[in-house]
Length: 116
Image 1 (spheres, rainbow, N blue to C red):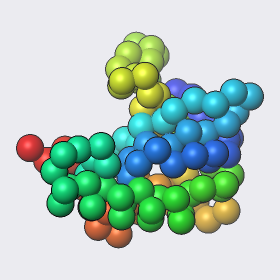
Image 2 (cartoon, one colour; image 1 turned 180 degrees about the vertical axis):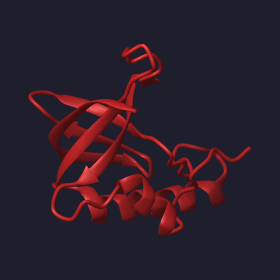
Image 3 (tube, helix red, strand yellow; image 1 turned 135 degrees about the vertical axis):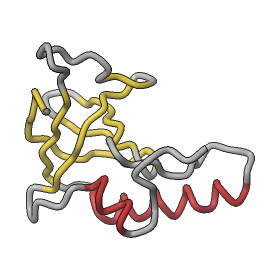
């Protein structure tokens, strides 16, 4: 269930599963259902995969007009809508309706669930 949906523009790609969007101010969005390899790690294999994931998201999202959807709980509250200073949400490209989480997963640059 999503309680807040708003138009925005992707202004910066942080890594393969996090972007900054501009509304009237910039906020950081952590893509839901999308777990990309980290770019800030000492594991060189993971870092290389993380850099490729980030590059793909930059290609697909940078400068795009999007719709951001932030979930609410059954009581109509945002509950767990924050993670490490980022808002958790789904982002859909306005031009073609593509969900960026699903795109990253389908392209092999992220997984739908967190890997151990």
